[in-house]
Structures are given as structure tokens and as C-alpha cells.
Length: 146
Image 1 (cartoon, one colour):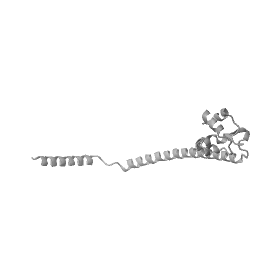
Image 2 (cartoon, one colour):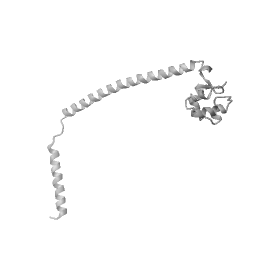
Image 3 (tube, helix red, strand yellow):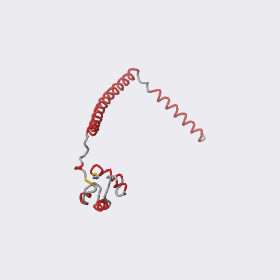
Image 4 (tube, one colour):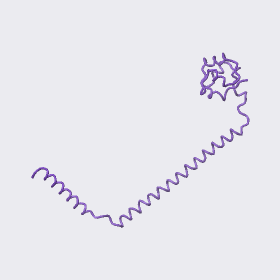
């Protein structure tokens, strides 16, 4: 026999063997399929109950967080007196040491602030190129100009 014929015969015998093997395994009974479907449905039902419980907890936590934020916003809006001027540092009167105590302000930067006085607005620090907008945003609630 030549090689091609042997190869074809081997493929044919293999196919017959697989066919017989498949025929020997009986299909699952209807009762067995029903039991498997019922079991899978019960597992899905239990999983959905757990997911629903988790979703309810998450929703309650989200609602509390939203309410807390809303209360903070309302409190901020109702607060008619922002930080009193006495609580803020006057850029035209503060010492270099006081200015250097502000976040992000070095001793050298404090000296430059003093040298560029007087200011008509605290935002003049940005206009004059002494601070970046980001640096100014950090100290803005703590400074004022008189």
C-alpha cells in the first residue's frame, strides 16, 4: 500500500471508531436535563437575591453620601459671613514671616510679595506674576487686601 492510501485508511478507521464511541454514550435523560435546569435556575435565583441585597445597600450608601454633600452645600450657601477679615492675612500689612507661613509660600516668595506692595486685590499676586493661579487658589481663602 502506498502512503496516501494508508493515510486515508487510517482517517477512515478513526472516523468509524469515533462514530461507534459516540453511539455507545446514551443521551442524557429528560429527567436529568430537567433536574440540571431546575438546579441552575435555583442558583441564578439565589444569586439575583444576593445582588439585589447588595444593590440596596449600595443605593442607601449613595443616598447618604448625596444627602451629606447637599447638606454641606446648603450650609455653605446659608453661611452669610465668609471668613471674617480678622481671620485672613492682609497682603499689604503681613510680615515676611507671616506670609511664609502660608501654604506653598517660601521665604523668598514672601519677600517678593512684600517688595511688590501695595495691592488693590489679592489676585494681583497672579497678575504681577508672583504666583501661579494654582498657588493662588491654595492661599486665596487665607488672604485679603485692605
